Image 1 (tube, helix red, strand yellow):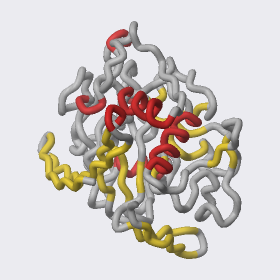
Image 2: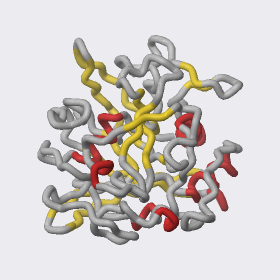
Image 3: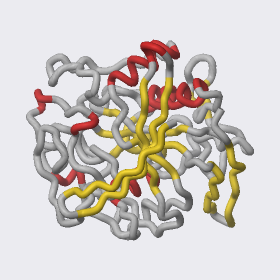
Image 4: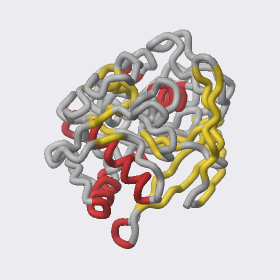
Length: 312
C-alpha cells in the first residue's frame, strides 16, 4: 500500500485529498484502486437532501477516487474467474481500458467487491449461494440494520450515506448542490479534463476516462456527477432487509440533457440482477474501512465498536 497526501486547488476551492493506493491481482492481472479518506465523522445529514438527512456518517472511511474502469474489471475477471460482462461500447465512444465499466448489475458489482476482499484474505462483503443468488447475512454477521454487508468486510459498495457525503459534503459539514469543490461552480458540459462535470456529451461520444472525467468534489472524488450512473449498496427504501428489492442509483450519466440529474436531489433505482437500466450505463465505485481500522458505528440505541483489523 502506498500513502499519498495531496492538497489540490480547484476553481478557487481547496480539495484536501489524502489518497491510498491499494493493489490487487498479480503479474499481468495486477491493478490498483485509489481511495480518498472521508473524515468529519459524526457529521449531521443534509436537511435539503433526498431523502432528508442523507449523508450522515458516524465514522471515517475511504471511497474510490474514480469509478471502476473496464481494465480493472477485465483483470479481476482473469484473476478471479468472475465472468462479469460489460456493455459493448463500440458504437458509443469505444471500449477504452480507462473508460468506466458499465452495463454492470448490482450483483456483479458485489461479486467484484467480494473478490477484492477474498483475494487479500478478508471476509467477503456480500452473501451469495452456490448458484449466485444474493442472500441476507444472519444476525451476528452484520452491524446495525444493514443485512447486506458483512461486519468484517474490508471493501464494499458505498451506502447511500457514504456515497452522498463524498459527493456533496465538505470538510466543514456544509453541503454543495453538485459534486464540485466550489459551491458556486455550476456543472459544465466537458469531454474530460479537470474542470466542470461530464454531462450532456453527445450520446455517441460515450463516457470519459475515469481519471479525466471532470472536476473533483470537496473530498477529492471524480465523476460522482455524470459519466456513468453508480450503484449504491443501499436498497431504494433505505432499509436493507430484502435480498430482491431495488437498489439505489445516483450520479447521472454522460448523455444527460440537464444538470438536474447531477444535483443532490436526484436519485433512481434498479433491479439488482439487471444491468439493462438506463441505456446500460450503470457502473460503480468501491469503498473501504479506514486504517487504522478501529471503526465506531453510530447505531440506533447506541454505539457499536467493530474490532480493529490489520492488513494481511
